[in-house]
Image 1: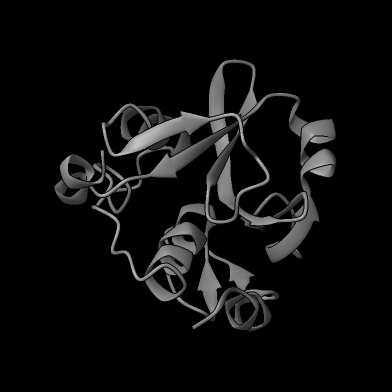
Image 2 (image 1 turned 60 degrees about the vertical axis):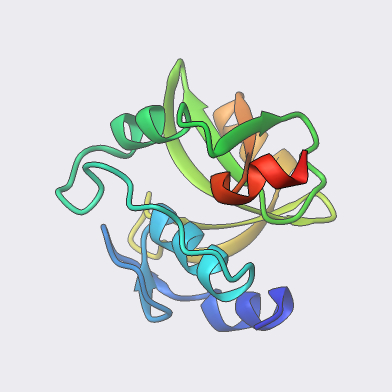
Length: 143
């Protein structure tokens, strides 16, 4: 599935905590779906996610693993972006190019999968970081 097909299929999906489907997903569930269907990458299971551990705790642990490399190049597609409240990561999604992001927002009753500009999220959250996923089994051969 290409990026535009994915966006057209997922936008409007209802936000549901810990859901990972085209009908309903939370912010991490959307990332998992994007990587699976657009990038053909099955992300490793995040410790604590299915058990209901907070997004903040899950992503703080996950983003420190060697398969995630922090980058300053927010213009790339397929990066995981992280929004912070203070020093705590509170929301994630994927960059889709052109200064735009795709994410599933559950902060209000009409929340769900949507496209917004990076600037819009920066104005809400302030701090954002970007991570590129590398497959470790290929990392040694690609250097």
